[in-house]
Image (cartoon, rainbow, N blue to C red; front, top):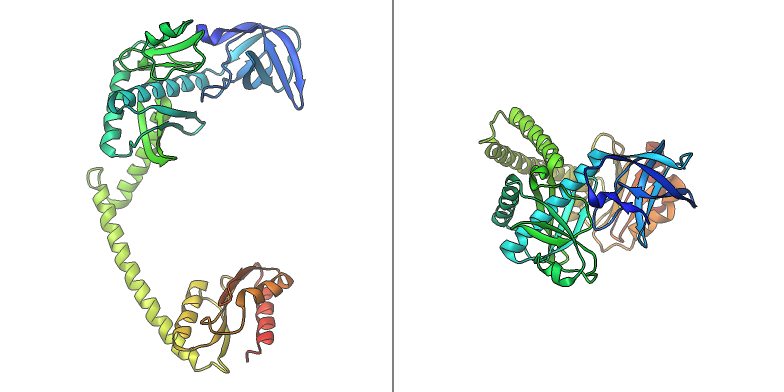
Length: 392
């Protein structure tokens, strides 16, 4: 059986290991070593990576107590230097220990349990069996968690062999398996059974920052980052705020008010623009109504958007019960629409012929829309539908 050195010393970055077995499984090569510093994926924590000799460790798994090192190739010889990707390991240690601290604080303050943990490449989450979406709650949790980090408390790792010994640590949730149970204990913060890797003291977590909280399956999912991840998140957000401050000519204390003011101005402009568009569309609709023959109308516009075309069609239908075929050459889109009282099934008609003109689209009985990659195809389709509907 492989000796799990990561359980004894998480700071061990390289060791000499002997290959006990090489397994070729489908497209993967697996190595079993006499001893390993590589943590296998488990308990919500991703595996370690690194090298064994000249082979890249791309994944590490634990099946039935056997540690399998997934490598890109089998190294030659029996003994090789195993080298850990330390930056990845330390990042996982920071995130995982931060998760314990947050969970312990939440349990102490609100009595809610951590029901799920995910340590991803981009974000970390915990699922809490209670409602923790209020800003004041999150601020209390975050402040107490960081206080525990700044106090640089010891992180105690102990393997216990009886439930009684486990309960001496007052663990917040005791798993079914209670023999040789590995307890992670942070005094006055948290105590839980865990197989992951953690720093020796909470100070190494650096900082924990809660990014957001959302309701999820009757629980609260908290998104957070610790250590270097939190620093990089702050640097990114600080850069954004700095650019906004320059853009809006405002400092940090006034930037929010400035953005709100600009948004209000935008809404006013948008409202006036919509009114103007409606007025212009009504005038254009009145002009086109005079061209309706037999309750039918068809035309193409060269330099207007499909939204403008659609608005004109709506204005016409508000005043006349007509069948309208109208398109935008600018966006290579076309609409067929009526007020719902006509016999023509717009969606069915479009679907029947669109593929012959390399078009895409569809719709309901009263309205259909199609789009084309090529303007010539649109015009050909337009003429074809005009002929079928006998629109002059």
